Image 1 (tube, rainbow, N blue to C red):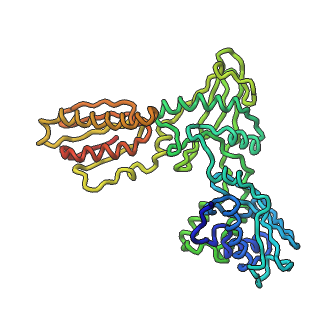
Image 2: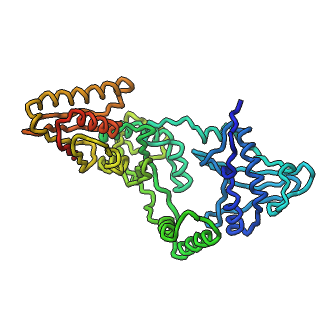
Image 3: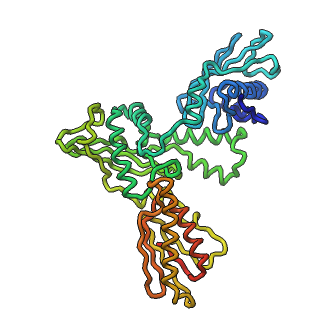
Length: 426
């Protein structure tokens, strides 16, 4: 039996106050709060009963405005319909909001005298399986390229055809190369995706001015109440449309190249990356070819910037290492895949420096063994060197998956030894 929500949040689908403003502004359509709130309340129930999921944020209803090419489709009658977009966690679908009355009265969106007990709202042809797929999809997170989406974007946006065999072969070869060079295992936490930045039409000064005017009008009508004047101006600057995106680049030859982008999910950070390939046989493979011999074709990255990937995954290098009551001063000057940690030994501990070296080595080995038992790919380090240099212990570590969480444990372990006054990571 479906689990009911304890309390319905009437802003799950429609925030009536906001949408009454936007309908008027964008489409010159009047919609009463009573109508919107009644529809929202019933549609929440209908969605729950049909799909079996409570529509928590970010599941919501919305409409595209005129600047986005939106068209307001509304049919008034004994059974009335209003077209909308249903946004789910991992996708969107077109839906029809439908309503009729038990009494036979034809309700208009602008009506204030709404008898919600007389009205019945529902979604026409709401596809349960499609909704569940977009709410909780089965995703193979261990990929650099998500083939259907990758192909679909290039087809729709760029009018460029990629074949499934080509993209699958590209993913299968580039994924292990990426993981070997970076020491990062791609998973749900470490999401790095190869894709393309969509092409958009050039933005003119007039379009920027129109966008600015519309957002200011929204504010004058009561939107963005949480922003003071300074914060609103900052928001306005950030949301200005831009067209600083290069076009799709593809050079076909003995050595072929396509220009893609790395998307770093945690930081929503993208940067350019060229992908190159050639064949052992001399055949020139095209991105649309269906008969791909993955044993013949060879893919590689042109100048993979490992440091940039790592900094994008962990953009705030000081944030993971905020500790209380460490027995030494910790300095993190740089976060990289090759970590150099230099520990200054207190004078009264110098005689036991060798034993501390052994203890730290054993600690690293133990942590690695525990993670490798779960999955060999998930080693926290891919090797290290340690030595005593006068009154310092020096460690050079090749950081792997879960590197930050490992370093936090290491720094705490070093603190418990209470024999260092300064630890510096470069």
